[in-house]
Image (tube, rainbow, N blue to C red; front, side, top):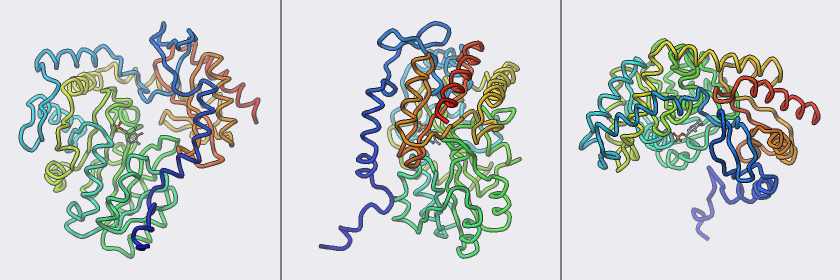
Length: 408
Ligand SMILES: *Cc1c(COP(=O)(O)O)cnc(C)c1O
């Protein structure tokens, strides 16, 4: 057989992923902790199809902005002014004034050059292949390093990048590996998350230091920390960069703490040379999916909240919740301002059983198992948020503490 035909699964093996994880999904279903259908309950709770009332700790809307009256009002105002779902054509032909104005507002707020797209994954799908091509790095093909724990939305682009240039996967946060590649290649791109969805953060200061010494570009997906980290909600990575340098791209989902329900942005340095190439060539940004009018309205509403005095209060409430959680339950993320906490329990069965017990007591947390985390490292992920009422949050911490203590 032709060798080329046999040489498959260099970067992903979905068949293997499915066969190794299907039993766990089925068990999760039997335990009633996956595919839950729920309706709005009272005081921020949900009610499932059996009438079971619960609070969830699985939403990435950490600040509860997706229900903020000003965000909802932003959507209504945008649709009243502009009663059209969106202009269904490439932004290189025609861009709505309302989207143009919103990007200008975002540029000013984040002191950067921003491009808005329909989602963060669409942004990565468009930008990573361009980076791999060398077009964004002065026409020198870079060596691309993907962090081993990169989010799925970036990993899935690996084969396309590998068709443009050499790529390699490094151990998580392996700065010395990255430095070594910098010593042996004229241009290196490191692709990573800012705040990781299963806990932990990138080594931004060390990467900045490498950027000062080598021709290193960094592509950060910092979806989980936008709005949450930094006093203006600039996110974990952007906060450490006093100004975005011209070798850094940060992408964010606007559907998480920012509360817009959809949308993704790429943040570049002001006057970035990359801007026009991304605008013209980043596939999914161009086709028929400019961000919808409703999302643009939500972005504008969320910006109003970000600029108000209330924003500090909202952020502080989350900080207080995080501090209380950390005072009760130790995790390897304790002390971090990113609101994700992950407790490793071991085999997936343990995680599913723990999630079931916690659910019965009125709280829903995510049981995570392979492929989201490594095999044998299953556990519970908790997304701390502002939606849950205070007294319920204290009760939640107590319940989780009891369940974890009973296991370990
Ligand atoms: C949620 C998430 C995404 C996906 O964002 P969308 O805007 O829904 O495409 C991408 N990256 C990371 C790190 C995420 O957590």
